[in-house]
Length: 120
Image 1 (tube, rainbow, N blue to C red):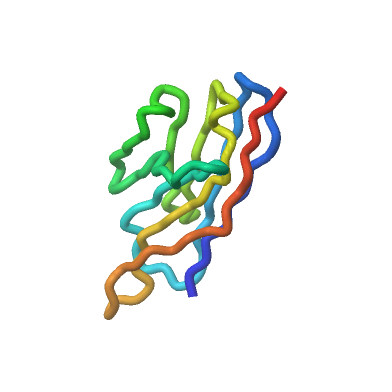
Image 2 (cartoon, rainbow, N blue to C red):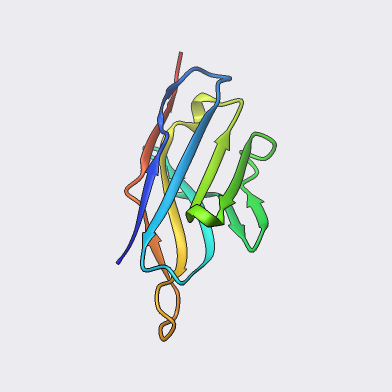
């Protein structure tokens, strides 16, 4: 009953910026954590950024360039990506740890992903 929908992907030039959004909807009691992953062809999936109770964490490859934030009123997490490089090209996936019901523990949900391509 919980859905995650990503948006904001597209084609950008090196050095450009892009803002990804992930909106959670459905039966949401509490969102404990939200994360962004990415996976490029031929590479393993990697954790890009996470936000938990206001604290943030980033992969070394994106530190100083990407910023994760959350709008609690909208149940939405954002990933602001600046100074984009060709190696940032990947499918980006939203993951959220959500408690949907009072009587049940939280569990992870995944979005369908959005493609980011950095090329001139």
